[in-house]
Length: 307
Ligand SMILES: Cc1ncc(COP(=O)(O)O)c(C=O)c1O
Image 1 (cartoon, rainbow, N blue to C red):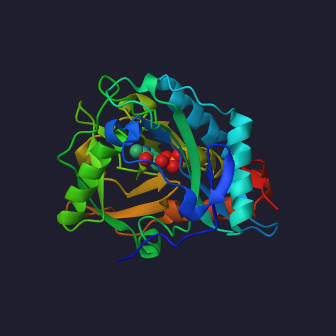
Image 2 (image 1 turned 45 degrees about the vertical axis):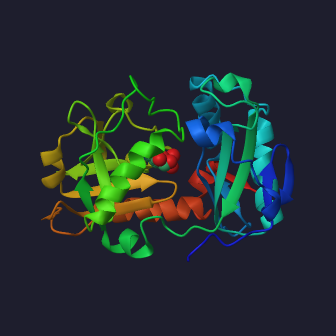
Image 3 (image 1 turned 120 degrees about the horizontal axis):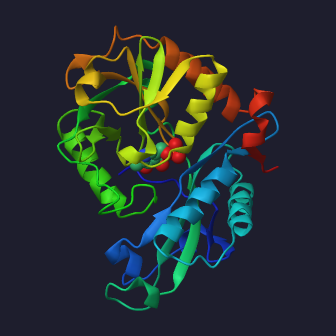
């Protein structure tokens, strides 16, 4: 079985503990009722040692996710940022994925989460590109899911809550069982929303577009990064809804996400996207690689060096 390779430490309820000591009880409230919010952050190798990419934006989103669920975190934003830095330092891994999570802990069962204490942990593990290095290079095969992305009348997509990932997992499994690499979910209006763990972008006639936050998506931090890159590249950009058929007729399509990076979509439901080349995606990927690895001083403010 392929598993996570154990690192040295996990930050758990305020302190660094040994990897194997970071355990919870099976009657942990959040495990049963998905009352949990989390983040996905990356640290990358740079000439000045490991650096965490856009840490403050991830911490802000973590606090917003908790606020939406009336979850009172027992730590401040600076405490949580320091927890991430301390963890990266302790594990001595230059390139890794960092996972802060807050959840209703062991206390009471039953739906009301306010009766259980909020516990917070930050884990870290080595995670190569989520959709594969070959996917980043050559593009992945996607399918439009039969599962509709939940919207903010049922589960708020702008909170990175564990509950949302049941919807994501259904779409992901359907895609994989069908022989695809990844899903694209439509929203309840039939417009493109996002991937199970990625935002979606389209390129047509030299214009880059992505669905607006009102389409029921997570406001991706990589999405924001790419929107800024597009401006810096002098490429035209629109935040706009698009339909399933506008996926098929795109010149280029791509996913963005902390886990997935910038991954082109080669094919959607058996239709080759454009002519199978990704000139704009490649420009954005180059900028992204330079930014995360500290090779472009213009993006230095996005890096938190841990050394
Ligand atoms: C549903 C969903 N959409 C979009 C994203 C991309 O967000 P980010 O770029 O902040 O990782 C993610 C990943 O966190 C996600 O889970």
